[in-house]
Amino acid sequence: MRLELGEIFIKDIKFAEESKIEDGILFLNKEDLVRESGFEEDEYLEDIDFDIVHPGESVRITPVKDVLEPRYKKEGGEFFPGVLGKVDTVGSGKTICLKNMAVMTTGKIVGFQEGIIDMTGPGADYTPFSKLVSLVVATNPKEGVKQHNHEHSVRMVGLKITRFIGSLAKDLEAEEVKVYETKPLLEQVNEYPDLPKVIYVYMLQTQGLLHDTYVYGVDAKKIIPTYLYPTEIMDGAVISGNCVSACDKNPTYVHLNNDVIKSLYEEHGKTLNFLGVVITNENVYLMDKQRSSDTTAKLVEFLGADAVIISQEGFGNPDTDLIMNCKKIEKKDIKTVIITDEYAGQDGLSQSLADADPLANACVTAGNANEVIELPKLDKVIGDIQYVNIIAGGNDKSLREDGTIEVELQAITGATNETGFTKQSARTI
Image (tube, rainbow, N blue to C red):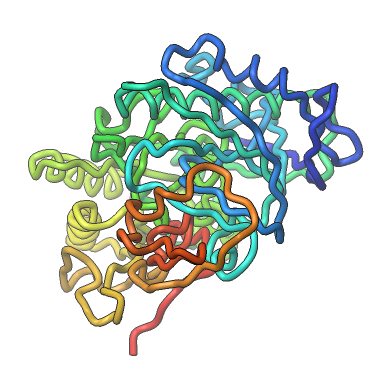
């Protein structure tokens, strides 16, 4: 598959009478946003509101549910296939991306594992999303709405608004174009026969109970591991639908901009032959873990990989899936590197992962999620600040009387992201 990603760089977002993109400025009409969001037809949402935030502003967004990047498919299917569009295979053709911006969703909390994004201060240094000018969409559920219905409604509002904003670029020319291509397997292997063949095993959060990821619209807990062209993931085939801990959650923005995939493409044809991606899930029951890890190892071996990179999403229970995948692939004489983060206690002295094995001897870490940080009081809060006392990484004393907050990095969206979409790391001493 060959995908052309055309980039348009957004300098600012402003509310206006007409929705359009002009000279790098995204103008948005609030009535258009309400109409396109589907809010008026949604039976579970009570209200909707919009804010614009900029890097460096004294603004805190919490609790954050998802972060998305607007795009428009010019050729080769529809954006968010199987969810908003037809179930057409994506990953080829031409797609326009609006860079330097995002859509964030917030409002009353769905599940306790939702996070904080500060646009300035020490918290902003730990989240990559503080660097983006963003439209923040705040929705609240009607009284008595169940959590799974609340999550679905918020997710769909975010996706629909993102699609609408992307469509404003349909007649614009890209400022930069980047081309990514992965060929059918035998052709790809023969193109660089002397380079090591590398597969990326992409573990998706699928523990249920608001811990879901969707592939072409299908809840990934229902799939067995399968192969995807890397460009499919870059083109909207995988979206987030979970409330896993904010620090290592993969928002939809991260799926679209997965740094492991981008880094492997950068080295493709130079130091390695990037064959593609095997997606697998993170289940709760041992039988499901065994099935998925067996199938993942078998598929990687069948594809002829010499080496594999494995990333997980979340921690604790998924650590078992991570180690099972690693050791089963290693036993097939295929070298592995795992990417994770750590929950090593606030002093950094506890066992970092819930599972381990001697074969997991090459690890990249995104840092210790239990590290404590103090956040200053900011001038504006979008969402509801009271939830910081109950979100993962917080406690009943996190929000102080003076407006400052003490939480673990676990509470900050993207702080220890396990695809490397962060500035955090660690080293063994």
